[in-house]
Length: 370
Figure 1 (cartoon, rainbow, N blue to C red):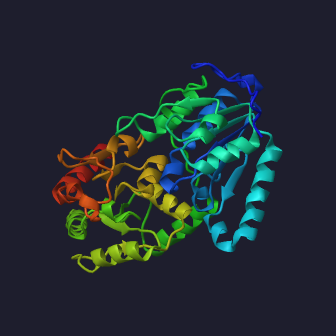
Figure 2 (figure 1 turned 45 degrees about the vertical axis):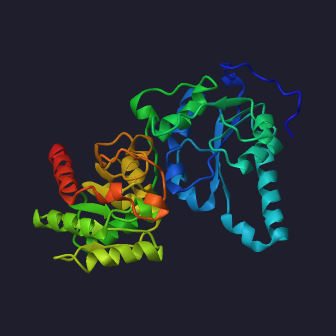
Figure 3 (figure 1 turned 135 degrees about the horizontal axis):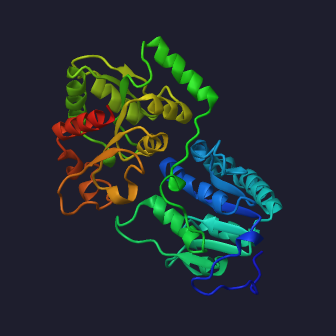
């Protein structure tokens, strides 16, 4: 465990990078959130190439970082452990702790206020430990040597907030591509997507990828708006490939769209793994979607993006370092972060974005690319 006599640095103190041999970065959040941590590994590897940098994430988000060239080992926590009963869960948890302790980390960076990351840090006992500043209780106060400030209210992109954890210990990222997202689809995903496209007579760069749904319904654009947009794209002779996740609610959104279109589209909803979805988006000439993980994947693979934002913060979560058009309404109450207006799952600020604006944004980006 971390000793009570651990050296306590003064504010602003940097860590001694030559003394750092192994680092663990913890991000226990959703798919898109994990992808937005990918620049951290690249930045740290560039600043301290002698060090090994590991990641700890939930198993269902691991595809966002697997294959990252700057990650030495990718450790995972399975959310399903809780369903196995206390004995089996304890066995899995203890196995993870033993694996992590064997790595003997000199530095742990915990990117959220999640209590699990705090007690894991306590058990691992690194010389340096970093976490967000905030009123998270005594456990946090005892577990971390450095705390970094998180600006409230849609003022700074999440990638930069993540990188602030490195700035806090004296590791400053370079400009531009040094902070780029990294998403590696892998040869299997590329081969699978190439076969899918060939079977449908589609070539790289010949289609627009549209991902209408999010696991959070309050982030979804109305079906009739999406139908209007896709009809408009097809009337201008663009081929549209529709995607979504395997969740029944997302599949139902795709079904509601396809049954109302004037012309059929290629619907791959629920048929792609996360790696395959990334490979498909990489081959698209344009991506259109709401605030969701696939939007971040589009940014990571460099596909121009039209992003629709309602109650979530476009400065904090918008497309990162990619040609893009972010569409919002002029509602003074946004971004509120609420689960729809009044918690009713429907966001009027998102509904107010006219399909004609999205169509114009798409044409503008396509024109710029051409």
